[in-house]
Image (cartoon, rainbow, N blue to C red; front, side, top):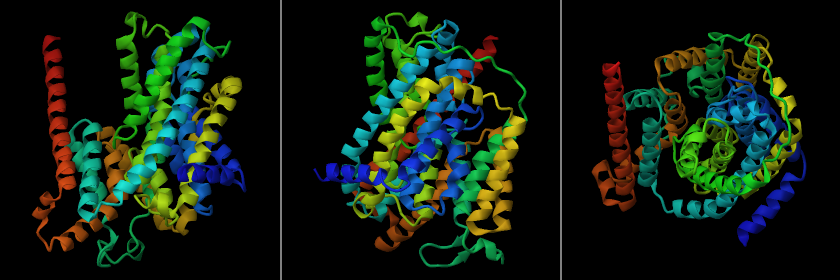
Length: 502
């Protein structure tokens, strides 16, 4: 009942002040980012993150969360209408969404995607309301050793799920950890790696690194591609599926909701993974799997629902444990930290005035998505045709102004540009960016947990194996690294066999 009372207060808070306006701005901007190929929720949140510095924490998180799930749905429209995914999670939607539009059923594909996203988002938010405070209360029993092992577990899962190899993931994570150690030691106050430069005493600016690593990197990548391609947009007809398709659609939506929600709990599980798993599941249990890829409605309903349910599920680890499960969640966590609020076990108890309005705003945001997308799908599709030569310079200017506005520092602009080039070359070389960003964000927490654990154990870190929770978490770390190496070895072996056959 206490959670229900907090949720009601959250709705009241969302309805007051400028919160509704910021929620709407976030959803609309997220939609814009989603329909523009080459960008996505991470780049979108990175671009607007500096602008939230003058807002209250609640207003800031509400707007950034709106960008997140707005962009997740925005990519669906271009996937269906012009076979061009706005972001990676929408790639799967192209498989059946675009064939449906070629059959004259683009409206049905977009309608099912909007309804599925709405239902998936609601189910995920109910899960957040039910399990979030419960997990947070249990996490309060964690000491520094448990948090150390928890952070290591999250990073190990990220390293193994992303990139071409575990080694590349580890190298990216270590690089991020090294960057996070620049500045003042969080435990004893020692200044490290400043090299006499006063700009480095307070550390590397989070916003400059993330905007460079994501927004500028995406722009540099798109400059290497043809930005003059013209698309024809399919005509929108009825926005609802046929009557006999509803039972199939409803079952697909329910399966996608629960799959996406639980996948959101796993650190490092990018939004493309639940969509792929949902599509595979729908194809496996279908009576006509051979029709997938030719335009079947459940090939859109399941993945799109899983996509939005993933958004709500991924909030739980960040809210309750302080561990972001994706780059976009890392941006939200950075916004919390920027406003002096630390996500973790005490977030629900110490800052209910922030958490519950954000949850309530997501109900409103999902409703806005349905209202804006069903009648305005053609309008959003036309926006996707904006030439990159016009769009990208505007984004660069926004990035430069945004980073400069945080500390009014030319040095931060230099960090932004360097991060952009480093991110681009890492992307070209196949190094995953997520481990770097997560270790950069979690570096202080990881270092503090190590120092506190060393103090608690009086230097004998082997005593960590006397704590049952630590043993379980470290076992997951070892298992994830081993399975990651084995899985990638099998992939290389399979590719080698295929090449020999050719």
